[in-house]
Length: 253
Ligand code: 13P
Image 1: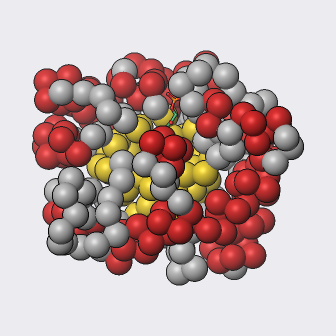
Image 2: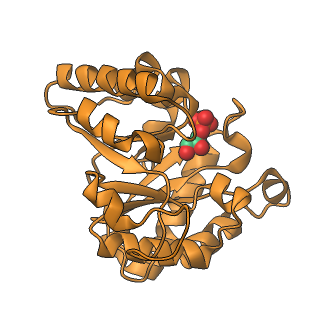
C-alpha cells in the first residue's frame, strides 16, 4: 500500500512576521526546486502568521495548517479560532490533540474528537496526535495508552483522506531523545491495527501515521524508512529551512 509521505513542520509558538515569512519563503523556494516532490509538505505556523505564510508559500506545493481549533463554527468563545476561520485563511490542515495542548490546556480525547469532527465538517484535514509520557513508557503502557488515545480521539467517520495520525512520545519532544526504530515501528503497527478495528482495514491501510519527537536530518532516514512510518511531524528542526529540507531529502522526498 503506497502512502505518500507527509513532511510536516509544527512551528509551535515561534516566529514573528519577519522570520516566519523568511522561513516560509525559504521552504517554498526549496520545495519548488525539487520539481515534483515525492512527498507532501505541510507547515503549521502560529495563528498570527497564517496569512503572511500563506502569501509567502504562493505557487509552492506546501500546504498550510494551524495548530488547534475550536469545535464551534462561531460564537462566544473568547480567544478561540474556528475551523471555518482556518479554511477562510487558506488552511488545509489542523493539528489536534498535541501533547502540549493536552498538558497545557487539559484537552481530553473526547474534546480532541469533537474538534476533529468539526474540522472535517469544515473541510480541514486533521493531524491527530497521540503519545505516551515517560512514566507510562516505564510502566510498559505505551501501546495501551496510544490505543486508548486513538479510540477516543479519532472520529468514527474519519477516513484516510481527512485524517493523519502523529505518534509523538511526550518524552522525545524537544529533548533530543528518541525511541529505537524498532520501538517506533512496533507502536505504528499497533496503531494501524487499532485503526483497522475502528475504521476498517481499507482506511487503516491508507491512513498516514507520522512519527514526531526530536526528528533531525541525522535520524530522519532511520525512522522514515520504517514500513509503518509515513512521514514526520517536526518541531525544532522545522524552524530552519536547511534542517527541514534535509529531513525531507534524507527521507527520499
Ligand atoms: P521536536 O521535533 O522539537 O522534538 O517537536 C516535536 C513535536 O512536538 C512536533 O509536533
